[in-house]
Amino acid sequence: MATSTSPVNLTPDLPIHVIAPASGWVPIRLRELWEYRELLYFLVWREVKIRYKQTALGVAWAVIQPLFTMVVFTLIFHKLAKMPSDGIAYPVFVYCALLPWQLFAFALGESSNSVVANQRLISKVYFPRLIMPMSAVCVGLVDFAVSFCVLLGLMAYYHVMPSSAFWTVPLWALLAVTTALGIGLWLSALNVKYRDIRYTLPFLTQILLFATPVAYPISTVPETWRWVYALNPMVGVVEGFRWALLGTSGWAGMSVLMSVGVVAVLLVSGLFYFRRMERTFADIV
Image 1 (cartoon, rainbow, N blue to C red):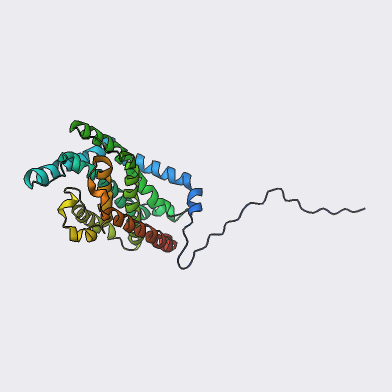
Image 2: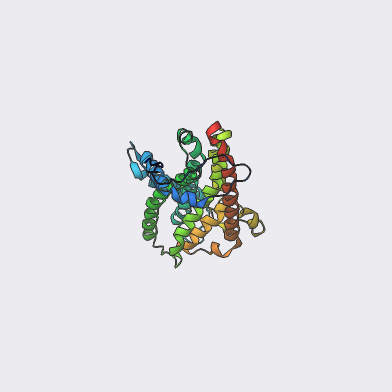
């Protein structure tokens, strides 16, 4: 008597993912970013180690840059130009603004070049490309934390007490990173096709520094022009940071709210533009 047997599937059914280029405006897949969170962690850790590898001063560079900039600004704007500082010791006043600015400038430069810097990784394996600019902006938080400790020591030296809004400092640091990410998403996608973006970025960043109330208080800007001035998103970040630490009145103005609105527009539009352009990264990078 003959018996018939059917093949037995010894392996469980595995999910099949089909990777295909999308057309039009691609949706933002936040769940996919969460699934690749370990890759984000390792990319951030890799960038931190590369940043301080084979350096003579190591993490001290995080302090030297804002500290020396503070000294130069104090000599030029305070001693020579007699720039006011809202009744606060000028070194503390300007160093407090330099911290979020340095965080923004570093995160912007790194995120704008993140896709081109990882071109070999892009052409070999699939992962959410948004992880690259996100990991780049997170690296600057290490320098920010170190420099913030110096600011606390500087405030103690000049007998400047933190305001009651001190607990909001992480929120303003997050806003600075979000601002850099929103602009960096646009520039990182454009940098793949137009490589001269990296040459113009330092020049534009330098101009933006003097268009931000870092070396001077916002009270020196004519009130009728402040709404135009506040279109610079870093105006709200710097004023909010000073309000949280020094208790200045910048938070009460509309400049902060306008800057937050501009950041939201930059971030959302940058996310969608980056997602739309990322399908061409592997071909032209």
